[in-house]
Length: 156
Image 1 (cartoon, helix red, strand yellow):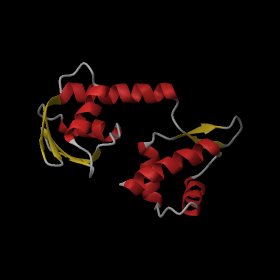
Image 2 (tube, rainbow, N blue to C red):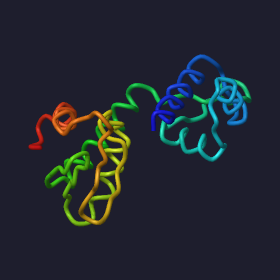
Image 3 (cartoon, rainbow, N blue to C red):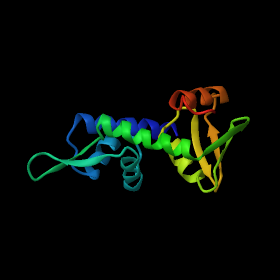
């Protein structure tokens, strides 16, 4: 997962500093920086980062990261999904079991994954339960503090 986080940072850095007009160009830049990545993985990364193409004012397009306002709105939407479905959380070692309302586990897990909480390695969602795997060295207290910071009005 560390590789992915590093790769996502590299993608953002390249897109901010250069006008990249194709996945092939971006892939070449990443390979040049020492990343081993497939086109399919890069495509998923771009989707995760919500990268889009914008016009250069002529007939060419290049990749751009979403603006700050779009990022804030996206985060608000993710937090609303969590609030809408969250019931409780319980822990066993580095595993957190999040209970949700029936049918909400998938959307809550999606939101938790896309908030990129530094304590969470990944999630698996069922119908009304999510298993969160905490990163090595991260504690339940750190996860709860991170959630409370993002959702101060919610009882966690």
